[in-house]
Amino acid sequence: MFSFLKRRSETADGLETYEEVTEKSTTRAGSLLLIIMAIFIVTIGQTIFSDLRKIPTIPMPPAYCTNDFINDYQNRQYASTCTFTDIDREFGIEEQVKRILPALQQIVKLNSQINALNYQNSNLQRQIEQTQNQYDVSLQEKMAKEEVLYNRTDIQQTITGLRNSVDTNNAAIAILQMERRGEVATVEPYIATLKAAYEQAQNSYSSKNAWYRFKVFGLMLLFVLPIFAFTTRWYLSQKKKNSPYSIISMAVMGSFAILFLQVVLVFLYDIIPHTLIERILKMFLSVPILRYILYYGTVFIVVAVFGSIVYLIQKRIFDPRKVAVRRLKDNKCPGCAFTINPFEDYCPKCGIMLKETCALCNNKRIAQLPFCPVCGKRKPQQNASTPLAQR
Image: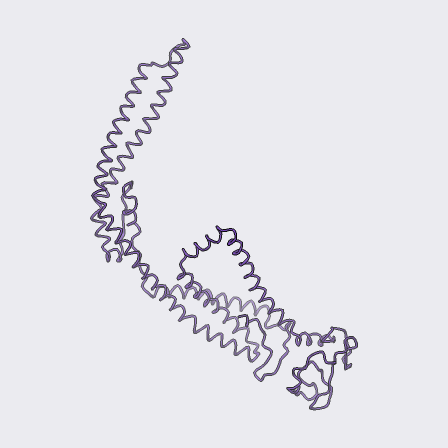
């Protein structure tokens, strides 16, 4: 899984290179240009994806305004206007809406009249309360034998008139409600038929939309996968040859790897039922034990993934052969890092053998390196696995 973090230590001829980890693959300017190139590739990929989505015919959903005719139509205050699509016409939704539209408009009209009368009653009730307060004040003035500011007779007549108006409005509201119930009873069978047709249209749209998403996924995969496979093979070929241009192929491969992952993850997100995921999360979060399992499990996964990446990086950096090369480069013992004399055959501190006799030319050579500095020949294969700490 993390093989891209491992630096291959063999060339095309099977020879170990002991590549220095401090060796730069490119300059800062080169790295910046590669980053810009990768961003450009990913950005252009989004534009191509957008164009690919337009190739299949995008299915149109049923007109959402049909819900206005189905749900709570008894209490609607306004008439909805709909723009119907082909799928509405396929399932006869447009014709059914036109059939019940006059009755629904009448229901809306009756609701508006009922609301207007209710609003008038609210105002009348406030006026009654205010007038009643004036009447109470007049009674208090009479009991206190003070100058009367309000005429109780006029107030009583006003209250009576207001209450009569409320009663008249209530009677009108009752008549309107009865008329509305008649309209509702007339339209209910058609509403049930319309609801069934709308559900069928929704199911048909869901199937067509799923097929559309699958087509888009196939087109995107057809675009990304061959290029991703080609760039991956190109990168591995360059890497195997230890080419200095492998960083270019790596940047290109990484860009298309991002696009490939985007295609796969978006498709998986589309096909996985979101409601199921939400229910599972709610279940985990509602139960204390499961909630803590989710929390600690997430922490464990994050630590395992990132810890594994860091482990492989550290393993590559602190490979014993590469550590030995770095220490020898600084005139230090490959085993204990003690400062040594390049002419000494053994480390005076730990006793590790630093030099040995070349089996091919009988000259001294560094024991920890694969090639003889005199004859340039590689150490015989049987000695290639000799440990560093030869005593």
